[in-house]
Length: 472
Image (cartoon, rainbow, N blue to C red):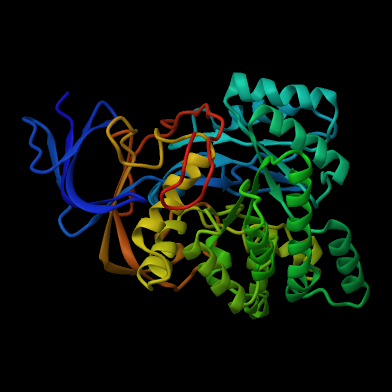
């Protein structure tokens, strides 16, 4: 097979950015060097452009049932959007299953939902919604048999776990060498404040933010870190960190030797603020998600945390509901609005433009946060998240000189709005490849439905964080 040569671009990894050619054969990166030439190979000229690993989004919610409503994107429409945005791998968080269901129930259901639909490679986290001996046994079976090596727990919502249950899961995860992802908010305080606001007639979208203050996040983050320490140092992954106070807790833990704490944030917490809840004509409903949007100082603190290596991953928490349909359930009462925001397609461009082009993070840090770190943490490296000989040829070619305006009209997802409508972006994605096949070209999807593969993941070997991470 003649393969493909990407010539004259700047290849980026967490360790370096350098000009070189890239040879792709049989879906893998065969060689990196200068002046590569292969008879019969397709040649792609990437002069003046960045050649990046396909982005890895380890926090999506496709085809998720939330109470009486379902997100508006399945594994086809959602992954088409992700692919056009430069994401070639996801690890999805399934919905809660029937009360008392076995741990494997939702994994089997999500295999059914994704197979034959996903256009990009995918894996699943397992969601723990109750704890008993069978669940603890099934954790090992899923890790060994399915390659599902991460387990999600919630400290709020209907299927929240209490502290004793959390401790049991954390201890079992430590025994198995797997990672626990956690949604950390103080459930009881939030529920009290929500009921209080409704009694007082304070039901506009802004009260969603006020009912989930940053202290609720910070307290829960502190509590789960302490429980992980009691469990013997379980690898802990804090999803969607949203506040300066929450980040300070992570910083304090890391400074006091808790190197098992990993943090994720999302583009919405880096760029949007609670002022969005004050929009006219109910526009604030678009931004009801949990944790809520915070203040500008929180955005800047999170950017600083990324630059300093305190936050290791930028994911999306992509969970889209139509503004003109499902979100309208909350028009008279924010507590009835389904939680979630779209963003799988916008992530790479928003973070590149707001982060790299504005000098908040380097291009090497960008690749670490968007590609390499999530692949390493969740057992996909070096197959994913890096451009190295032997890795999957998942490649994004980005032109940093081009600008565009983000708008629902030029995006591909099924949801009826973009949270970043009208944002001017520096940097345009010109080509996206997965395993050497072109998925998207000049904002047009050209891949095939169902070409994504399920990924059995390894257990993490993560010991340190950020650029130059150490591994076992």
